[in-house]
Image 1 (spheres, rainbow, N blue to C red):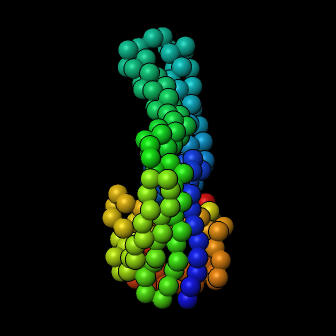
Image 2 (image 1 turned 180 degrees about the horizontal axis):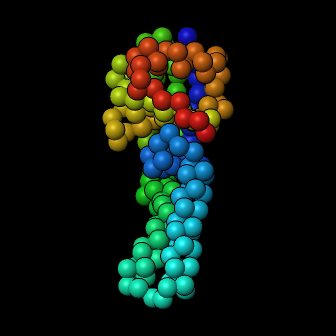
Length: 177
């Protein structure tokens, strides 16, 4: 087995990683929408109660909490990917090339400031998440390799999934988005 893929650490890849770490297996767009709908309904109910029964400090406080939760949700969904991408500094737009072999993953990193090669046995990965566009291979809980599934050559993604599932078992998670 010699399947090749790559991934450039561009904004879309970092956004996908950010959403994965924040929303786990849930579809980020659906979770974002439903969370905002729930808080909007809660705010509307509280507002209606304040109109019908008069101002109460507890109702005002709960309404403020609902508004803050919506604003926090907006910040997490819209701003956190931007902040995370900007924090990459020298790693922005680094291109990793991956070669999946029978026993290990060969990683070649190329950029203006970094050049390197590494070979990582599949047994060293602690977990993996698969979305419709990316595969996230976690070497530790904080170190992750991003593989763009659309760049695969030399084989199918099912071969990679089957190989990784042998080593990771339940720690290989397929996200439904």
